[in-house]
Image (cartoon, rainbow, N blue to C red):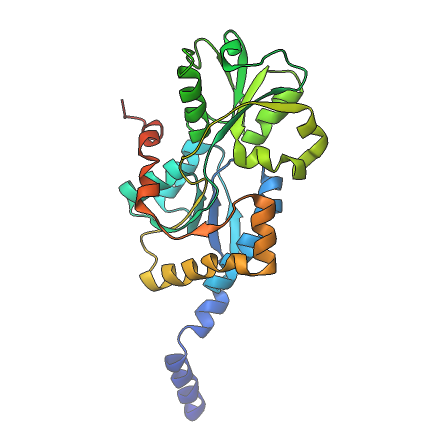
Length: 281
């Protein structure tokens, strides 16, 4: 009996990670709430599986009710990894020590939409109209604000704002006639044909923000993740597009690609961070 116990003990010392890895809790992948939960599962499941393979752990996707709730949960360390917006990621990096793993090749830009039969032909025609936006703390909203300001219009004053739960709801509000114009990310709009081609044909672009803009998505790791783990995860994601599953993921999601960290690209988000900090002027 003593000999058997000695063998078991030696086995645990030689292979200490075997049992914990098998019993480990799933990693919590926090996804900022830019689309509906069903769209999130449909679009991001291949990426979720790639992360699980790279980390050798099950990964579960979770989100938050709104942007600020997501920022707060990221700060608290409620997530083990995050897929986040550029300004949210920049804040997490600078304030909380989160580490950038990769950024998407797709850049953030705003498209302003109207119904195809609308008589609105230029941004100046939006005075006195109602615009749906996903969240006033989003980069999409801020880029729309800049576009209107260039035409002498103040969003929320000259153009009324109707805030919706997600960017997907912007399109819905526009189609249902609740608003006359809507602002949503080009990333979402450009792949709307995959969601509902008939709906896409009922709308048209009034304005598209030109590049360069911050990269649309950042995948980030908490400050507690080791450099070796971050590097392993980064390498797996940078080669994801070389696989059939990865190529289809990038085509369907419009993430375009994954790129290594770029501090100059991250700095493009600096002008937008203030909306995420309650005490900021």
